[in-house]
Image (cartoon, rainbow, N blue to C red):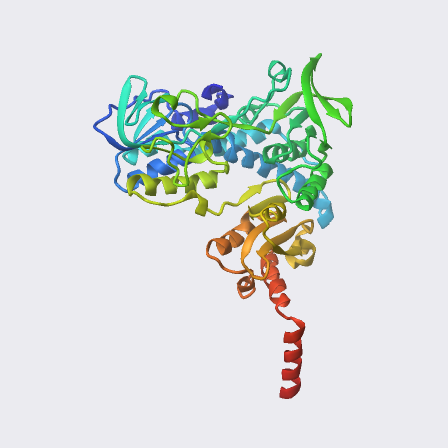
Length: 505
């Protein structure tokens, strides 16, 4: 799709956004000599690479054919979290009676909600703007960047020479091969945030992070939302009991969840968009006003000229890279969603840091050393890092698992947020943390402590000695440390303690 479609409606806020991330009056500079680094793509990975390299004194060019800031700023993290924030306010008003506060049902002004999102997005956009990066000393080019040799890339009528190049073109919503879907019309994350009217009925295909976040969000705004998932529960990647807590919460918010359902076709019936699913051998029809496809990502590879320069790539998995993010052409690297299985803004950021080290300083930094957490921003949130139990079993790794239900955490009780838990998986026989799952209102904030412990090899038992403020929900992590330490009180140790206490009485 054209980047201009992501900027609808053409109001003041979107005009401000465009003036920052793809100004219509921009003139591409004239290349002056060879660049240390040419970065193709100005999403998170590209921006971090370009800014970091320029900050170290490198001569850098940055090429973008669409909107600077990439998916995160324009059609991803930023707009979605603005909507989720508004939806949580609506839910809080509805639930106020549980706290002894009488309130009427909130009236959601969807047009105002979307205008707020556009205003906030525009206010953030100067950080990713062409003006800012130009002021950092980076030559910013708008247009399709096509590699023509191991040392040159063409943008329009400009030829740029480089020592190293970085492909950071990201990914986009995939076109699913569902009969009738394209002809019927549907929304993705790239078009959802251009809506100006709230759909009365919204059908969401896919129970992954995007599908679940937006299904719950639009249900809280007042849409009748039906979510279709092929698996037996939503969030099939996550631990089942974690997913079921969120599934129950979404249903309480009014989301109708259709499980074990395979979409076989989409068709029009009058003004209705109908999703036809196969379920238990029977066809079922789900009628709606809009369809949101919340699954599938395709790497942006078109127009790059990869074959001509010997860069191997896969249409589904993206650019092929080694552990140091080198492609099959040693002058060309890649970072971010175009090459990584971890399609998150924060992982793109840290992959970019590896690229800077390895391209400019002959570094040997490896992507495999990164410990990457992620979070689905439903209510409650689900955050995870490291290994899953099934994954550990498949690899023959034995675990000891420690779980602290939020129903045993004072702050969660006081907040009325007891549906959740903090769980840590340790290597059997030690307190080395191999993985963790948190289900909580602010799980994304809480997981950072566990990630730091894993990164710096701080054992779970040592976390017990860290004083956490009371009352906070992060006390749940400390309580897990206490749980581990209690496992060291074997019968023999307890017997010795008993003898000592009798002797010293």
